[in-house]
Image (cartoon, rainbow, N blue to C red):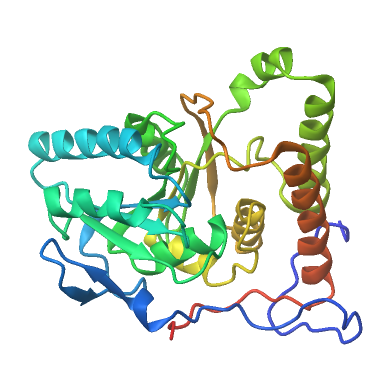
Length: 313
């Protein structure tokens, strides 16, 4: 229907000039093009435009996560190392993206570079805070994997569930362009969550779900789970068009994917609420609601367009 259309590239309506128009900002500071090796030397990151050279890249956005990240990294590295022992052809990297933290996040992440080597653990330190979406995008654009997983630094999702989202990718038709996305989902936990939440929080949650459905993404019950797996081709296509760099970025990513008719699987994962969430409940829900309205308006008016993947500066 006309209320749910994807605006093709090139369809620009003038007017609505108060909306921020323009290209997706893929520029990065010179310091953000390099990662430290185990001995402290600097080497350049590769590009998502290059062919893949590993099986799996794990992107971990981290903002002031010096306390929570070690638990997640121990679990993830334990799983990945064990999988490599069992499947010698399995290769991986973890890219921790420090999103302009004011604590020791980078230093904590670099311990893993020193322990496992920079071929397996790389740290991308952003010069200034971009928001979770910006951090995930910067890490993704610097990755080498055939498959690219985004995973939160708090370890809320059991890392071994990567196998479940991988199975989800294989269940959708990724031919002919090898494009697909598999989203970890907490929708099966919603009944439990409603029982333990205040009425106001529950009202906000349902309000947000309705806005996601009404303005942007149909058919995905949980757009916000931070555990998503992309084929390299799907990551390049979606992240090249992403405008939203803060909390609602997942919704725009999935909106872009649906516009490009990229198949999306949704897979139940184990999830535990971890103390110390950065999302301030009420304000963040309202902010995300506002972002959803703007995502829709900006695409409808042509202020934002779907981009063809292009090289970053």
